[in-house]
Amino acid sequence: MKRRDFLMAATGVAGGGAAGATAAAAQETTTTSSGNTTASGNETTTAANGTTTSGGASGGGGPTKEVIVGPGGSLVFEPAEITIATGTTVKWVWESDNHNVVPSSQPEGADWQGTPGAPSKTYNTGYEYSHTFNTTGTFEYYCQPHETAGMVGTINVKESISSGGGGGQKEANPEHMGVPFQAHFVGLATLLMIAVSLVYTFFLLKYGESPHASGGN
Image 1 (spheres, rainbow, N blue to C red):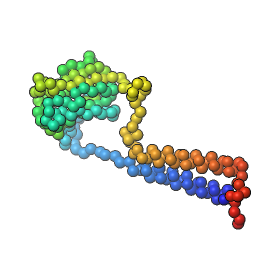
Image 2 (cartoon, rainbow, N blue to C red):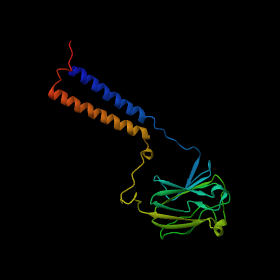
Image 3 (cartoon, one colour):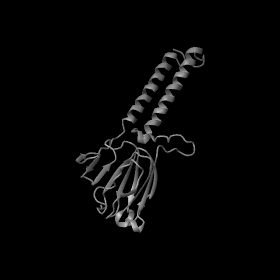
Image 4 (cartoon, one colour):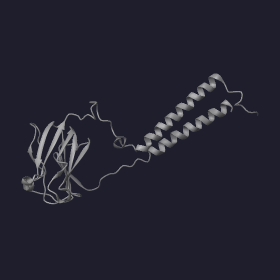
């Protein structure tokens, strides 16, 4: 094979790989929510799906932890106890009727109010309530109509949560970074292909072609 032919082929392969990575990354989809929202202070209520969000004007942006309220009609929060890092939003999702979230204790300086309305006000299946926790400490809460039945919950908020015993920060999931998972593999394969092509080209140009590789004109 002539050097010129090889260089042209290597350039075509690298260009094709880069184009494939771009096409894969372009497959990323973004889902947006619909419905009219009205804001008042730190609280935003979306009437379209019965959702209330509190705990910071920014509305979160960090990770979200979901707690099911009354799963299958049972009088429990599931999970009943969670541990999260500061900036995490906890979202309670109602799967049965006549429940609420009422704080019973919280760290000094925190101002968590629980679900809107008086402690006797309850909500039904399909309702969602979210709150972003920015104060470290232990938060305890209960469902007012079913507290005596043991429907209580605990939230432990820490500065950060390490993965395993290494003490380092938890590695981000590529899917949560806004890029489809398969695009990362395509990108890595493309970089590897380009690197191999460049190394092979370097040695070919430096040491010349094998006399057995070149054919006749």
